[in-house]
Length: 92
Image (cartoon, rainbow, N blue to C red; front, side, top):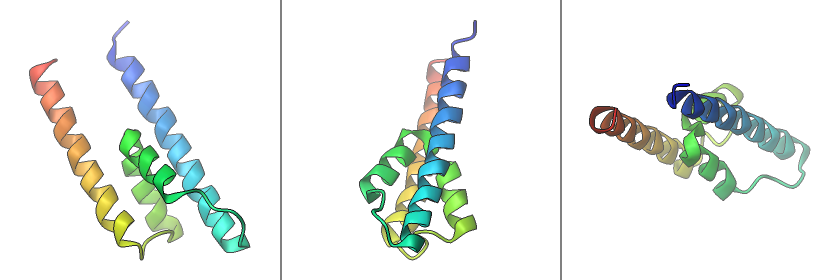
């Protein structure tokens, strides 16, 4: 079995979880309930859910006024693509 399959499955799972926690945090914000910590959202972004989290944030208009997210997540995406390219070039 191709070892990249595990990476792809991991990325699908972390992106689905990232979408769920972002939508949940938006729901809690609207209902004035306990929220998901910003550090948790950024952690899931850094763990590989950055693209889906950024897209869903734009779609549901959540955290779009927070500089930490509007600059941080795109920066994480760029870094992840650089790491992917380097691993692809040097390892595979």
